[in-house]
Image (tube, rainbow, N blue to C red; front, side, top):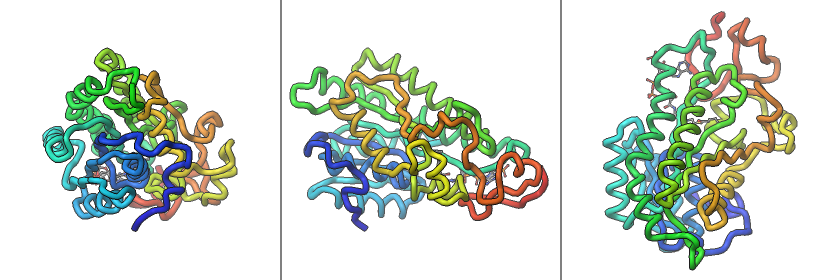
Length: 315
Ligand code: HXC
């Protein structure tokens, strides 16, 4: 299903910003990362998206390709970021079929709402593995191609075109700590830290490494997993007065990947309407009548969240 451009890209960017360039995206069939990829494709890039689910990933690739006539978008399913080998093989296929990798979005993530008291060691490890090890594997599998791209695209850019850039998708939970998100907060702290080291080690090779930290973004898998509070109620808790849109994240991506972001390196760009500055728990695991800290005593977190297991037993 083709999506109107106004939903994934602001009307402020120049056509052809990413002509002849290739973006490699883990989690590229997900709601946020598919919008980022779609925006890149609309502005000239070809793309390779990676995911665990074969059908979902291939379908998303076909759909993203409709954003620009002649766009080439490969969907590689059956690829888990926890396996370095499967990522290296996907990166190899991307280079072979599309000619290189100029941009990377490390977007694959795992999330479910659970208190520490009910979190098994394997549950904690699963999220650390997907987010931290997965981001490391993504960096490891693609960085030689990004260094090559940075060589082909020295700065200052003569034609406005760029390459050799990587973004990881993080969160803001670890700035304060977050009930029911102890695993995710720890993982995202690791992601931010890793990406800073990438900036320091690969900046001298012309690569930029940054992080985008989205706040609550409407109509995403993340929101369906995190909060049972309606969008209107949640929006009122956010200083900017609304939930974010996937377009807000796409626009941040275009800023960082295009020539406008050339001197931004080792940065965490928070796109959350200032929500994290309100501090701490603002809606994770809650719904009307289910609030912090009550859910820690009753064991009853919001009903109907995606990815939930088990009961409301006392913690
Ligand atoms: C408690 C849970 C659980 C739950 C899983 N586990 N869900 N524990 N409550 N709701 C435990 C399991 O019991 C198991 O531990 C361990 O986690 C691993 O679970 P598996 O199902 O075996 O793992 P796997 O198949 O690899 O699935 C990974 C997953 C799953 C992360 C657990 O939820 C998943 O595939 N999610 C899809 C991707 C995703 O979450 N995307 C959301 C991105 S949104 P035991 O001990 O039983 O073996 C996002 C937003 C970030 O990231 C925040 C932005 C603001």
